[in-house]
Image (cartoon, rainbow, N blue to C red; front, top):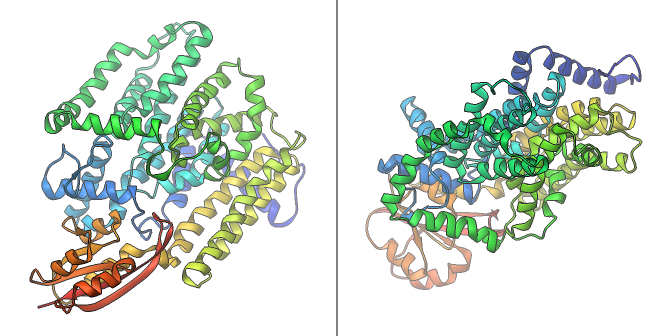
Length: 571
């Protein structure tokens, strides 16, 4: 264990290093202490900004709106976004979100069905579960202290922090994947044992597979299957997989997933499989969907930002992994990451969160390499790679200030002190590494992560009003003196507006349709994007609508400025 007696640095750096060491020591005392500290770290990283962050186009409000429509219609088999069938993912996340929102309504939460934070609770729970399950998985490879540190690195990561705040599948998927891989690891590492694998481990594996299928189809079976295939080839036998009792497991999986798949087959006439498999999954393999193309190697670059602060140390652990590739523990971690990573790099459609279920293995590998003395300052280029730890928060601080100034003409003063503090602590993590204390550097980097999440999401994000186009448009509707107006939009068609305004929001295609909409009687409101302004002015000559508001901002999904004027007819 690293000692503070040697190499003690005076002042605040020493105090911070001492705090990091004490937290590591506390986490190593017992499983209960480790789990409690990991939950606290997770909540510190994930909760700030959880409710104030607007619905993030486009995926998040699509999921939330489909869940909302389940509650509105009472139809919990078919998945719909307005009148369109949403046959892209299985039903697991929609059920989870609907259950939470229904509970919120029962408890009297005001406006529960349009409170996006309620729909995010399954993702928050999935992210916290990912951290705890990373600790459980890491215990198969590391002593308690190392497992605690590896899980803390997962909890402090930028990507998991973001996914915890988004009402979609990826946090829950990651929890399922880590649980499955933790069970598979125990089967692999004890394959020479004569005793049976404990029943809780077997059940954890198969329940994770079943829930993973209900959340995102074949992804968890892919992670586990590719790893099992590579390991079986390496030892020229797959007999070790019998320790997972596949007969019992497959029955359990079918019992859990088959009812909904049968129901959706009968409901959609097989259209679900054509859309989910033929269009959504195979479409991403064959072509880059929705402008998300990127060349092979992209994940190797973006991982340094998305899996900050652990990614730099994981990169330095690659030579260790190659040298020790025949070690059973290292071999499993490589099999967990490498084949699935190559699949993602080969697929044209690339999104940063695709590799999130692989990051727990990278954290475990980094801590293992540090513990064995394979990651240290004297390795060629190590100091420069470790410099990425302070570079990411410093770059993010500058980027957020520039963005806030360009978009809203403000400096995010509320978040700036904490952003600077996160950058300073990250620099101290680099300094600890350069001074020859790599484990301490990892622990201090976790503290930097605990500052960065609240700084970005809790204090800086609320100041970026230009990004909150849909909430500001909804506020225009709410300010009308007539209750329950009919609302339409021309040009701006983001799912976040559907979620906030209502399922019956009319999506118009022309200025003539907008003018006709306003003359249809009753209290009516239409949003007109600037590119349709002239045509609308020509078309609405006889309607005489009243301008009731104007919203300008930046459309995250389109990546460009947007301006809309609101017109109302009120009897």
